[in-house]
Image 1 (cartoon, rainbow, N blue to C red):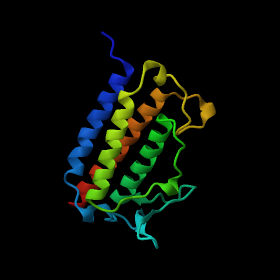
Image 2: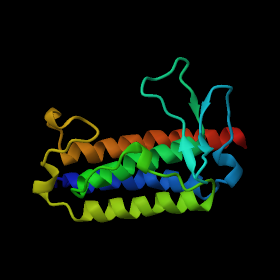
Image 3: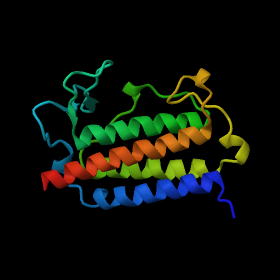
Image 4: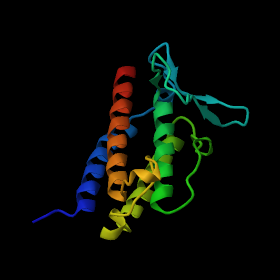
Length: 171
């Protein structure tokens, strides 16, 4: 019996999330901004009392090691924009996605993004899966909503592995 595409993608997402939830439950506020190397990307306090992520339009050499703070901001950014595209909303700019700060606020933010993502997946029809979407590719690339969901799963899996490894190294 064939498995519907969205069912398989949802299963893959849920599996990856279960691994992430394991690490989320064990993160301490001090874990977020721990810098494991001399050259790191993190989020830094800004003049407005918020946080500004390190960023470069051209990848630096050497490539900075991301902190858990940077990785969680990065996840929130790409996930927010993916949701914007999936829901047909104008996409937020990178600068508009604010990191909540170390600890429970960020964990709650990521869990809320998960809930929004699952609700969006639940609303999809087979026709929706075949619609083209312009993120993270240019619209002319012809990628579909199915591709977007697969990309979110892959990006989540990569970021979860990075966060898990950083958490274990810090311990």
